Amino acid sequence: MKTYRIAVIPGDGIGKEVVPAAIDVLNKVALLDGRFQFEWTTFPWGCDYYLETGSMMPENGIEILKQYDQIFLGAVGMPELVPDHISLWGLLIKIRREMQQSINVRPAKLLQGLPSPLRQPNGFDFIVVRENSEGEYAESGGRIHSGQDEIAIQNAIFTRKGTERAMRYAFELAKARRQHVTSATKSNGITYSMPFWDEVFSEIGKEYEDVGKTSNHIDALADFLVMKPDNFDVIVASNLFGDILTDLGGAIMGSIGIAPAANINTEGVFPSMFEPVHGSAPDIAGRGIANPIGQIWTGKMMLDFLGYEEAGTHILNSIESTLTQGIKTPDLGGTATLREVTDAVLQYLESVYQ
Ligand code: NAD
Ligand code: IPM
Ligand code: MN
Image (cartoon, rainbow, N blue to C red; front, side):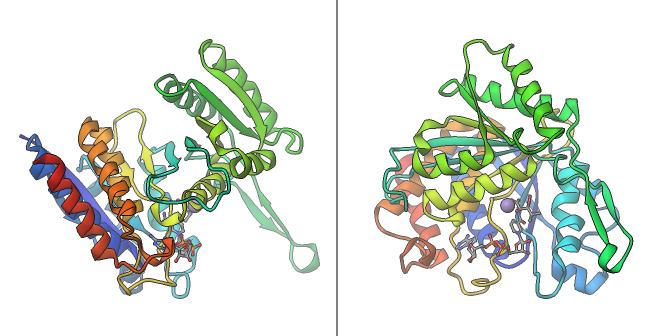
């Protein structure tokens, strides 16, 4: 039996509620499957930890995490108490950066049992490949002068290596799917980075003759994802564009609360990190009504990554069965609690393996 050692960081707000629910589901699948098990080690890092110690994680936090096979994270942020630039840069973004998790894979698809808010969702099923380490999130720039003359400068950095890596990842993914990549650009308005982005898309695209290619400006793409989301297979996007498109992906599925994500270390030298698209949702935290599906589906992505795709499929089927029975949290218009949704998923899993 294979044992996977997973570092768990529930983080803040609803992260502390949805992570234990998803762990219940992953443990159940492991037990029923019988080929693997998880050994979870939980780290209490986050805003409470910051308020006690003055930092979001210990100084050797990254070294500690490197000893694990993968990382399972909930969400980070208590913006009323700790400024976001401190909490996120001290934990979530720090891990993504230092573990070189340079690709963020974020699927969005119409699920059975969950009506989309769109009038014509037409069974959409796409994956956003988000560049996850540079672009608009580069730590480059500064503030100069003061008063009315003050200037804030933020440099977006697009390296050839990082851009090619994102393109290749997207094309490889499309090869195993419906053979189409759409690039999110804005080369009509942004002078250096986006023309470069287009060039690299076209160059790497030549290596993938059989894969269809489309380039859309990000503003038009936002329109198309609402009007004809079924037109898309794989979308490759810069860090910020990918961030925005994937909240939109969550919304058209029915709720940001169900959107999953995986931060991938493509070289396989450091752990990857599995963490849903949504944040810590302080507005509903502590009430037991957060939707656990985003975190559970994120767990499915971890199983797929580890090579247990059949088990992963069972999880997604369990999610769809739960939704089809109308067992839904309030963000989906239902009245079920987090626990009721989780129990329904667990129950369906039992029935699959019988
Ligand atoms: P958010 O995603 O936390 O919440 C946005 C809205 O979606 C809220 O109304 C919330 O109640 C709802 N929502 C989100 N997840 C839900 C779930 N699982 N079930 C039901 N409803 C859900 O975004 P925000 O309010 O902009 O951010 C709150 C905090 O989280 C901030 O500190 C922000 O920086 C941080 N954040 C962290 C991450 C992360 O750790 N990966 C991602 C996004 C935001
Ligand atoms: C996400 C989040 C983060 C991001 C924030 C909290 C820094 O929105 O994971 O989508 O922008 O990457
Ligand atoms: Mn986001």
